[in-house]
Length: 207
Ligand code: 3PG
Image (cartoon, rainbow, N blue to C red; front, side, top):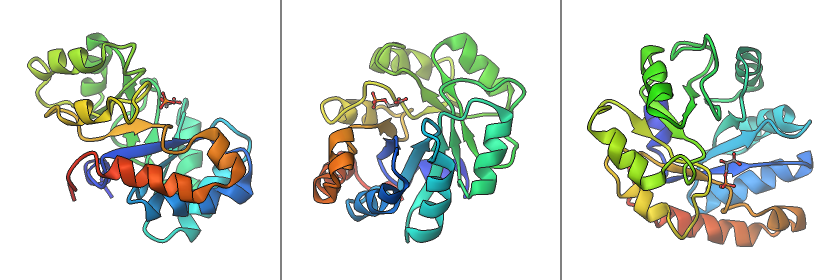
């Protein structure tokens, strides 16, 4: 699946930090049940790759990707684990739009955006969105960088997500608010499904 197709599946990509592998599948199922099929499992815990493998194999309807992908080697490892896409907080030196799995690189400035466009990318994570200028930055990027599309992430929440999603150069947003750490720890899957439903309702279906 192309990045364009994946990013168009839902208005919000949950950014997940999973400490306990037994939580991976129920957490993913709770989010998919709420209408958020695109899941970003960050490589911030020792079990992250195993979680990706398990979620990709066991959750019907999920599109499982990896986040916090910092090196070419990790991009490759994620592809081998079954990740359908990768997200990075920045540009990975030497990596292009061609590669073992689609990559959504992070940018925070015009110069980084230009480097990303030169590497063949047209979809970018604005990160950290709230610090890198947020909605004003995305509006300012729209005219000089008409080919660029964004998934702002970092400081995006139920409070401001709709404002981001209303921008023509925003395809979706990323955020952790749909899977709060305490709800994951407690296995409160109903709460997570409810949060996902609320996030899904933020924007019309873009399938
Ligand atoms: C992250 O890297 O943790 C993501 O950008 C999520 O940020 P958030 O917790 O502000 O949603």
